[in-house]
Image (cartoon, rainbow, N blue to C red; front, side, top):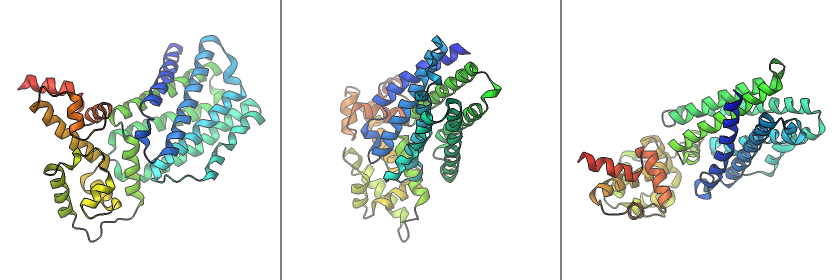
Length: 336
């Protein structure tokens, strides 16, 4: 059991670095700067905890019993809340008072260590209640986010189990607790890895779904079927998706709609976000070119259909098709 926990600690730390270098790029958090910063703080805090767990389990290092460790523990719940709130509530506004969520951190240096430790898990319980309420509010979107919400539910269950363990340490000895705690964090990282591999732009997808959930309909008096036909014509005939700077506002202008109207139309009638819709159009065009132009490079095809970089193209292609462009071309060439 200890060996598994040690493997999880190492995996968590290295995957944290990978998240910083890939997922937390600015292009994945356009208009979500505050959420991006909070996410980076959250990942840093969890990686720090896992490092502490590694040295405790491997060498018996007493850092896990220090006020600094407990202070890092206090960072987890509020940083997760401030990271996920803009996504789950479709509200990217930042208010200075939100920093007050980190005030309990000082309890780590004021209270006796055991009391401060238990209080950290108690406070975490209130944030879990908020998370449960927010996820329940998005229940109408479950058909669009079935896999993602399932993974989030598993992470939520893991968090509940950790909370129970943290508040009832008398049931297990300290070493067993840290073995289970390190394993739980590592498992959560693994599930996050799966979610991001399945949907690299999940933050935008969830934010769009939340915006649709909380805002009133803007489609009154709009002939939705006619607009969808115009949209399809712009994609199939005019190939508007080839414009790499195409955004929601410019496409809405082409259809004489507002950005909110177009976003709601695509969300409600097509069951996807605007960004997902455009990626699908580009990937579909790329699939055709990959087969029709066997000598064309993957990069040239990516640029021709509107992607701004090869990495963005690969991420979108894997997300939508389930394989890489090169493998797709090879497999379909063999079947011809």
